[in-house]
Length: 398
Ligand code: NAI
Image (cartoon, rainbow, N blue to C red; front, top):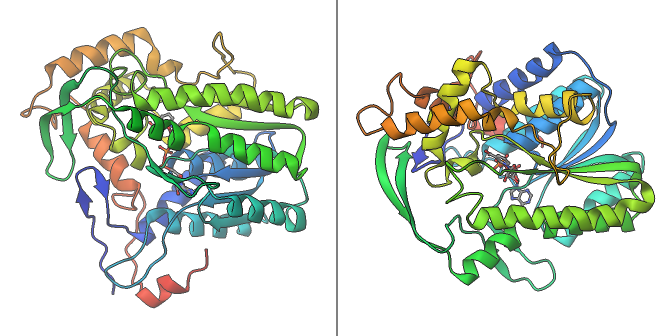
């Protein structure tokens, strides 16, 4: 019998529990089904579909709106008993199995979304087996590296400040430590690399390729998740290298809007709330913000996990009647996080935190840790242990 161990390095999860991942996907599906159905798109492409915001989008759109979906992600399958692959691999499988049971198409492409080849493979599939046209493209990639598809040059993103170093408290979930970190400002190469990897260039390349191939339906929508945050995280997020990458996505949205004008299409930036994901856990200082924010929002009844947030975005806002936009047309579901009383209380709480109390009832460290563990299939509600062999895991088809 395989033993599944949670193995955390810093704030990166290396272990995986495939059975727990499946249960977590089923829990998210149950959340959506419990809310009932809504009118939405029927043919959806999700780029970055295997975890957190992308996976939640896929689950909400499939089980809420009855959409057939194509998911693109970069994940690894099991090799041997010591290397079981990545959580997203098992999420993809659990999603496909559940969607197919409901008669929905759920096609997984596990390959580098940044390459030309991925785009052409997806296009060929849309034409031959997916009905020829798609009506929603969700772009939800988060990556540390990107290979330029034309030059082959590899770019890396660096989550850094601009101009001045930032000093502040951070949390290490591996040793459950609270410590002071100094984040150095980025150099020119790091700034350019972050924009190249996390900016909107690849989103635009996808939309150009899809349009060129004539697989976008009239009125097509494409969404891209952004984050703006507040003064509490601006020095290292919105005002740092990631903020420049997000600003690049804002610019590319305008270019894509021009591209899609003749088919009545639209590119929509969605400013999403702070949630616990593999990508956000490695943002310096951000876990401290989260344990304070989640505490305040839990008390107010406004704390959301990715599935709660994303389902509200599509059900109530994008395809519902409760959309709220800002002055430049971005959708703003993050207004619960940005609520002034929430922010004031979060700020006051952060100021009280130290090594002694950061794990106490004062904060939502327990929530952060559970949500982080859930991403790899640990501490999952409803989990039932099962005997599985490596052969059985290897035999699962993605
Ligand atoms: P995540 O790390 O949970 O998921 C990233 C997805 O991208 C995974 O499906 C992964 O397989 C896929 N991926 C990465 N590199 C790939 C490649 N080369 N080819 C194909 N697939 C690849 O990330 P998360 O946090 O859900 O982020 C998604 C988006 O949401 C990002 O743009 C992020 O900035 C944004 N966002 C995140 C917030 C947060 O608090 N986590 C808040 C607001 C926005």
